[in-house]
Length: 373
Figure 1 (cartoon, one colour):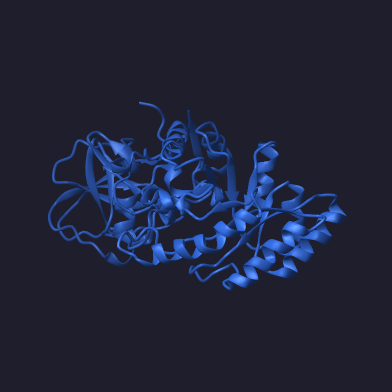
Figure 2 (cartoon, helix red, strand yellow; figure 1 turned 180 degrees about the vertical axis):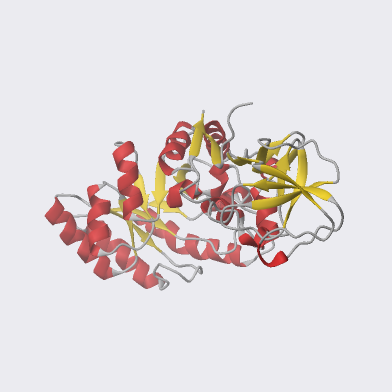
């Protein structure tokens, strides 16, 4: 047996590449894939997953911040980058230095981009954002959007690159608002593309991409799906996706509990009978959420064992039963497969009342990432 590792996130880059290729293969017409690698690649590793997504056919990489664009540019000198988020003046400078395309939804920002581009000898490429119903960033007045598109298109010092929106309920299959947003976007976007043939139209996130080819336009922006996670929170394998991340640890100790003995802070679990308890040296400091107290599971010795007691910062305790073959240094899996069983991020998200995005994004920086081809 190899030496135990306290905590390790194992990322299968081949899965990221395959998922990207699967998404590309399902796109309508000539639509391209923009791989979203913000938030450190949803906790998987931005640079490594960006390379894998490009190998799988992605044509562009999207992030939320200028700092993320700078990180990618250092590793990927030629990759097309798009910063989707709001940028302060210093952040805009950093994004332009990185050669990233940027989002715009106010005339004042266009003027700032023109000035900063001239001073930095960079020609900004902008994607005008139309708020069709998400209610966050973006211009919601169609006339204002037309004015922004026209201003960017006629500028002598910037280029109009795209027109985009974001969909609020694509992951809710019964939502009619999804169709309303798409129609709202189409009504404005398609005539503008007729006026500006090079305009890149994009609206779809992962859920929309898998849900409706009518949402694909010229490009889709997929994040969660490239990592093999189901944007609908169900079964990624049913959608042809391969989960890329496993979270592993080991059983650091095995203890005999008598009936009534307690595990963890607050004595929130008492042994109902004599049994064995395993201690796994990971906790909420690693991203194993406290909400999994008496509400989660760990795979060890090829079997599923329930988390008992309160999840602490650095340890969880698991119920090994009355008789156990699990010994100290037995490998433990918190996300991933062991034997015939598997714990999916979707299962953890359901237990926590959240989404799979938060599960992987929450794996902390103190957990090393190991990348496998």
